[in-house]
Length: 220
Image: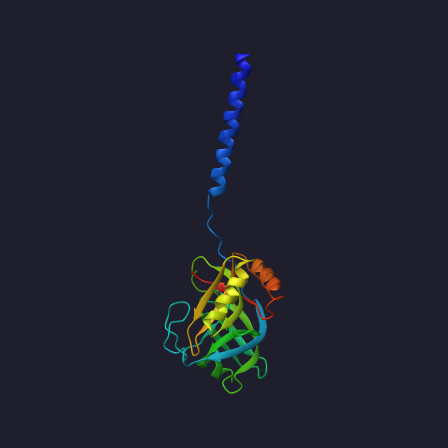
């Protein structure tokens, strides 16, 4: 009888220790993976625009001072330092640029060029053009990053906050991010996904409510 009691007690103790072990494993945090960028040679086609004043002399998203007379560009998801070959499909003119900023934050566009880059492919006059961009290579790694979905941009902060509150009932995280410029805008971002395909799936869901929702990269 005593032997059976000891065996039962030992079984309960072993079960308790195993549960504690599982609890410890569940609390263990894993470092997020760095999103895998597109392969060198990958191409994307869409509408490009350009920007100069009032952003000239301000900080770009990668921390350096934006100079509109240098050959740079803003892209929503490509890592900083990415080198791109941009071809204006209306005239065949090309320019090589380096990604140092985030944008464009207008739906339907894939790239914002500096004024110097836009001038080189004759984009200044028309303001926008259909382009093809090809990845030429990457600069040094920039650390951990993730993706979110932009569902709206407002000049009125209260409208951005109202949308953020509405979305937070179903999604997390949801944030309102200030975008400096003239005018100042408040962007509403949803999610924090390590994988680009997960962010694209979230964007597809959010487009049922906001047709212009698109993926952006969150840089550390």
